[in-house]
Image (cartoon, rainbow over all chains, first blue to last red; front, side):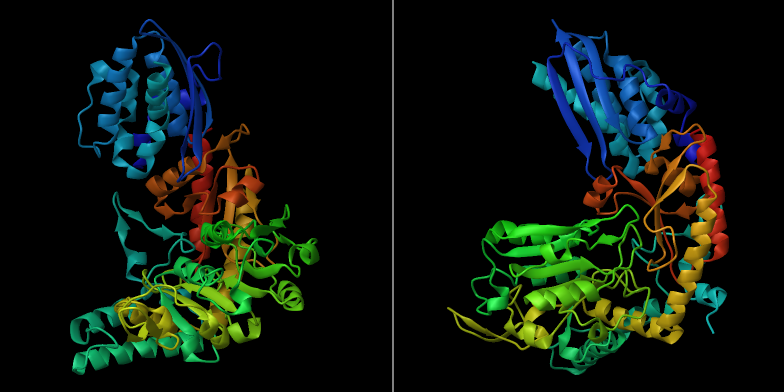
Length: 143
Length: 421
């Protein structure tokens, strides 16, 4: 039962009860990202004011990992500063691309540390990163 | 006498253990099939004792390698009922075979009227094609200004031939259709489309990647002009595919790739070309792969393709029944076991009626039960768009699969519904 280590309770919880889902106004940038190998997609908006992330809203379809990752992203980024949030994105990316060999910094990642198990599944890393890469893109465009 | 237990013993991987002590349930042969000892041993023996380049090495090993490579061509010609061995072109895969034909059209070098394509001309494919039978024709349309048209697919997953006479008309240059769908399992009826193509003077190609491995296919009986298939889906190695074409058409077509061995004579400013099949086999070919493919065809012939088909038909009926009893499971494709092969794609909901994403289905099946299925759009995105779904889970059966494995799949799907309930 290797899968149970990937499908952490917290991931399933976010999947079943996604936080902040739905596209909202106002927003400064909207991006649409897809994962061409599996058809997962996300539309994501950010509202930024004076370096502070006021809202991250999104709509998408995909597997539990991609949907839960977007939900966790919403929770972590909303209310933080752009700079802080991009630091979390970098740490999350480092964890996901670490092939399961990277020790996650729980202080930086918070709930996102639950995705550590995904890093061992190369085919699923893109699912976890989809919304996070979309967020990074949206923040750049909002500037 | 077809004996699945004996057949399984030929495939070493089927008895391996996966990490965590899981046994393997391989239901992904439509993606790529496993290999029997007969293929592995033939390739190993050739590499160990006979290997050299083919065609251009004038020594003992060169002669042995060339003989083995050309013998494989004879085996493949016989396997698909080709009238002549020279009509069997080795490619690297079915995609290359399809591209080879697509690039013969609209090429200024081609003087034959049948391969001239320009604005006003039409190319006909279908909505149920693999990307490899879509993109080469899109590229041809873009290069030449021709119009790409396609058959639609019915809700049951059959080709909709209502528009046949409109779709295939005097402007049509080629119709290229899949023989057996890699998603729906549908086996398409070739004759009505071919009859119409002949009526209007269009050529016809079949993507037989999913049919040649699973049923007796005779290109002469089919009566089409080109057939593409691939080695790795028919217990052969990857890196080798086949184009069969009518000799007269192959002769009329321009070369595809230029290079070694495809020439007759070369000057600095021009070349003349080798006769088929070598005209289309530029460069050192996948030698050991071709020989392995010959061994694969011999293996399947030894078992009997009619028996392979019968085994898969029985398994497919069993699987359709078993999956039909999983609540929230919807088969995308024919639900009756008629004119369909052992490729079964489906969507799955949990017991509350929410969709479970195929990635999650496949992950739990693999990690908890060692069941290998394919998840995603299976290189047929337009077909998934037609059904309004982003992806499916696909179980694809072959000669070595058993009813026990289908039972395991059904049990696994119930477990998936609990995890994502």
